[in-house]
Length: 174
Image 1 (tube, rainbow, N blue to C red):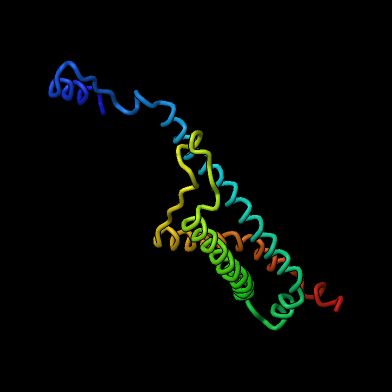
Image 2: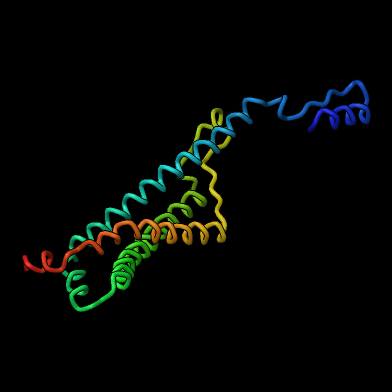
């Protein structure tokens, strides 16, 4: 409560009862909870970086494996943008397969933790007996949506390399 609200409550209840805000009564708890938010943001940034690097390396491997296909498509007259779209399609297929597998594993772990509290915590230290989990269907949808968008953006980087493939040198070593 703001200090003027506390004064109004004190006038209302009388002088023999002391009114304190939870911020002043438990500052350590609130600081501890604030650390979770910072840790969560740092963890999400690290996870996004790892995911981006993995997608980038997977598509680079895909491009290296199919260099001859890109060169052949260029020789046959395909535009660089259509070849790029093809490789983004290959990468997107991998991302969707990974999301399906990852969502399946995460959903199973979520249900197991929710139902059986497999991961226990020391209640004296953490104020809860098990790791609390809660995700809504909307949060799940937006997380997957933004993961696909991020994947497409990351896939644009290595597909630029496709434009630099010289058909003559790529097809020469067949």
